[in-house]
Image (cartoon, rainbow, N blue to C red):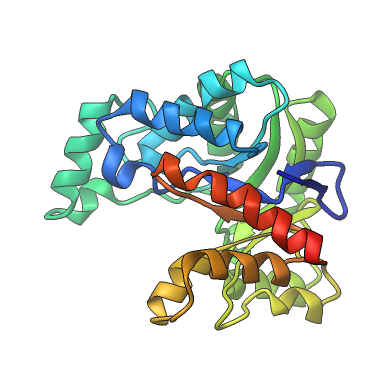
Length: 273
């Protein structure tokens, strides 16, 4: 799969990034199956994975550890600010029970939000420990609200993390209404923005309005289903790459049989360009 260098950074990623958020909807009790899928994604050409402490109640980062160890060239994103209820070191059965009970008692599976730097410092060390890496390639604030942040303190801390080698690049991962105050007030945290987008609502147009490039976008297939789109999934993916021409798009699947299509789509779209 073709790789690109994200604008305003030195981070190279595959045109499709493999997202780990949804792997636990059906495979929460099958860690070996999840890891086999992640290994197959590398074989299919994915060179970058998107994860977070809250994904799979902490299991996602741990699932990535053997993949990252076996493939040193593979990079990854993790996040900070949204955490797992019950902590990030729960076992598979604990996660399964928490998800099941949470359907009836939502507080059991509600994700804590905490943008204090004291929590963030512990979270960074936890993510490094769970993934088995010395460096997080891209570290993003996870859906932050500007009014909750001590921006100058965050910027200084993340710069320190970058200078110490614990983080390569940092930035924001959020949706358009959360991003708007940052852009309107010219508040910058890092060099990279990961933003929700869709073919229907074109949320990422907010970037161009403020002179920012599209770097990483996500949400196209989910939005198309929500809008009852008549497009096939491959066509949605093609149009997402055509829309984010110079960046990368986060995708996900739980079916190994679908993995080869992603490199084929990248080749078709980029060759036509």
